[in-house]
Length: 218
Image 1 (cartoon, rainbow, N blue to C red):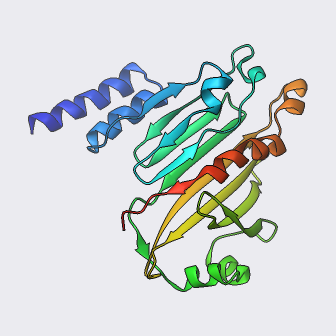
Image 2: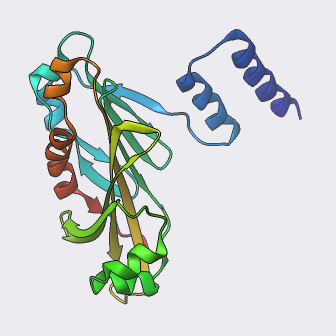
Image 3: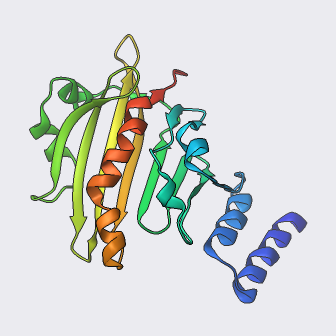
């Protein structure tokens, strides 16, 4: 009871005293029994371009970076979260890589995906008529992945690309998945808007997608 009271006191202290989102997330993670986020940043493109994120469920390379990304107040950084990693460049590029952790049961949707039946997949998910949905293969083991590209009416200056990659066990009874979401926010500065584009983000993410390795652990 005393420990619960302590956490309640901490939460109210943060709320009343003022805190940023990262501080609040860390407190709530501790209350939930999870480790707080671990934040990081890269100092230069050499370090970033040779870095691999090692998660319990997957391994994946960092996006491609270049020296100009560290101009002025910009830099690549992010945080390790309980089920993956968040990576960002200023407010322009944001990448979220997460995993389901536990394997799920192989079902009709998985069978349709392996057969390339994109119409079946499209009917089973929430998707707008003008959203793009297609099947690609990425990763060290050539995983089947669904790719969705879309924008939102309330934020037309943002573009999204969601990649869901699947790994099946040998018996085709279980499946593990890794989700990679790219979010592009168009810079208000015209010069930066020409330099940092949705196409550029997708091009930089190619090495990340090709490097994905989904671990076993059925």
